[in-house]
Length: 228
Image (cartoon, rainbow, N blue to C red; front, side, top):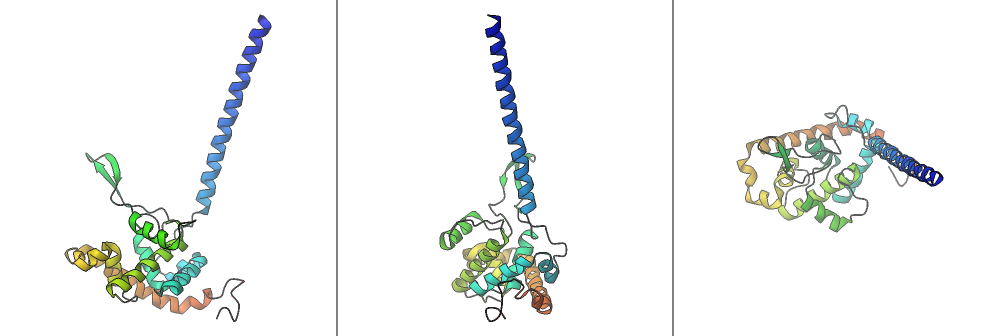
């Protein structure tokens, strides 16, 4: 009897230790995953007012912006100005939370998310057309492609020039229907923001002209005559 009891105690101890080892291993795995995810998140540019500095810190962003420009014929400096004003180059940017009774969190102001602050309906339309495989609003390449895609559609539907950063932004913020109805005319703060977006785009354009040669054809596969 004593032998059976001791065997039972040992079995329970062994099972308990085994569970603890699995729990410990799970916690370690979660911590490692969090560290890897944090390491993969691009740092926020230090000098956001200078597009050359932004591209020096993240040279691949230049390639993404030019790819989107080539695809949608929307200038890279306008694409980057949109991202700058929408998220300050933060991949995890979200709108502020709504609160009930001033202190109980109750969802967010909108579904906007990521670098381009793309809302769920627009992002769904985009992925339906461009494909959803591996696309993420927290990925700069996808965000710039989204901004180019949306502005291309705006230009085609509303007749706004693809170089008109101010009106493109008003339509981006209000939606094409809202822009057509003139909802932005009653929003002076939005008009000020759209003006700042246009000013940023103009400054970015001048800056890029001075430094673009540093980023063009900087990858090993970008060789003449494929790149010039």
